[in-house]
Amino acid sequence: MNRAEFLARLQRGLVGLPTTTAADIVADYESHFADGLAAGRTEAQVAEALGDPDRLARELKAEASAKRWGQEQTASSAAGAIFGILGLGAIDILILLPIALPVFGTVLSLLIAGVAVFVAGGAVLVVGPFIGVPGGALAAALLGVGLMGLGIFMTGTMALLTKWLIDATVWYARLHYRVVKPALEPQSQA
Image 1 (cartoon, rainbow, N blue to C red):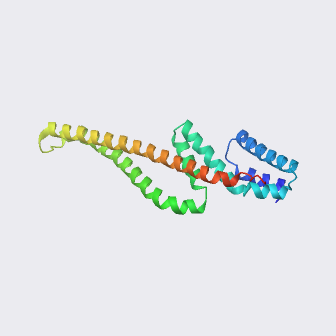
Image 2: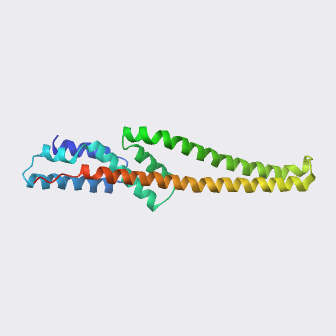
Image 3: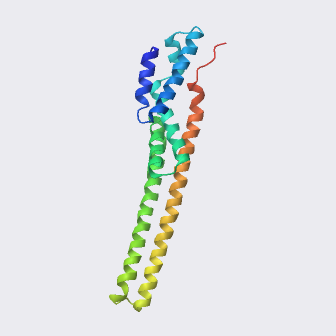
């Protein structure tokens, strides 16, 4: 593979990143080619030493989305970090997906259940005194307030657990990137 093919594949893989970030990355890899050519290596040798440009793009996008999650912890940056990590490769997906999907699914369902319990508590609080709940209006009001408190507790706990899970996923991505990064850098020939 020559310089133009490598850089074109890298640029295609970086689609979705901010244009300035992608341009900086491509310029960095162009300088790798220039340095390699100055050292007497061919474009094919430099491209081989740099590795697969598609894999590089996936790893760089995952690292960028992990950095974004570290800077702004929003739902979109969390989704970007998770999908960036899942994009690292099929082996990672085969290992991470069977663990992550049930855990995230359980947490999300308990989060939704917490909201539902809160809404049900509000309904009991408002409607309970008028429908003749056993124990009277005071029991209905206390039951409604209790359910609302339980809903707030469930929602808050699951939101906190969701943040911890996303942080753990980002930590995994950074660990993966640190392990793979030495294999991506050009090896010095002695």
